[in-house]
Length: 149
Image 1 (cartoon, rainbow, N blue to C red):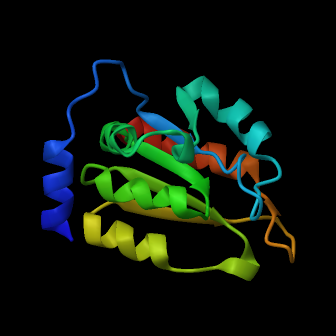
Image 2: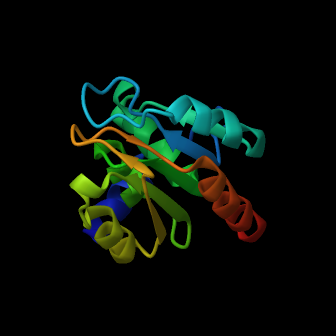
Image 3: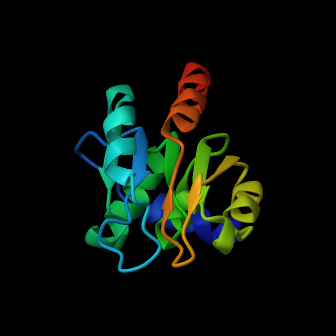
């Protein structure tokens, strides 16, 4: 996997536009597994330079460019977080998850890529897999991470 990753990263041209260092992977366009307070979370973390990204709206090339430039990626469990494989070593992935849909995928992918991984369980876990995260706890963690990246 690392060899394939390296080939993709090398073959993707560097963006001429300034790319965000901190991203919130949005599930706003998703039909299921919604982070119900995603907008409130974004409002709190955008002051640190976070940008909201809907990976499904970007070309594959742009997804790679955004991810390899990213120092902190945060999001609710979903396919968009798979872009962590293009992040540089020792960067940070923060996964928010619903207790009824806890999987270890992103923890394992992070370990394989030498990405620092942290997960937060929602404080309100709906059986339809929607959730509400604890924004102050996540913001506090982000403040700590920003000091070291």
